[in-house]
Length: 84
Image (cartoon, rainbow, N blue to C red; front, top):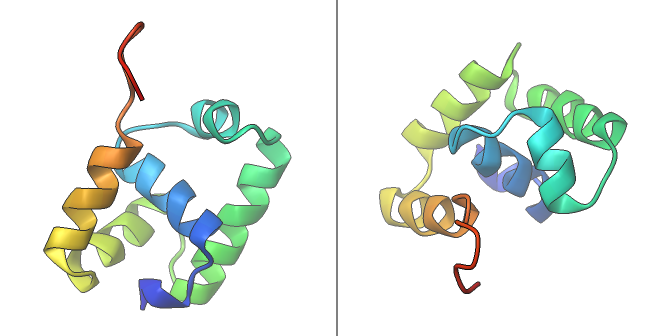
């Protein structure tokens, strides 16, 4: 089911799965908070979910575990001075 999401929607979903709140996701992705909220509306509509918790649960249960791990690692917060 998550394969119906755009790459950007998946980024938002993975950031949430990694503990980021909307404001942090917006900053990291260089978009407005309103844009993040629009992504969430589309994610919930496409997945048939009512909230981010349910959407993350769908992500974690329906995607390939190796792909989830790889993307979660990429979305994790970086420490100050850590190379990208």
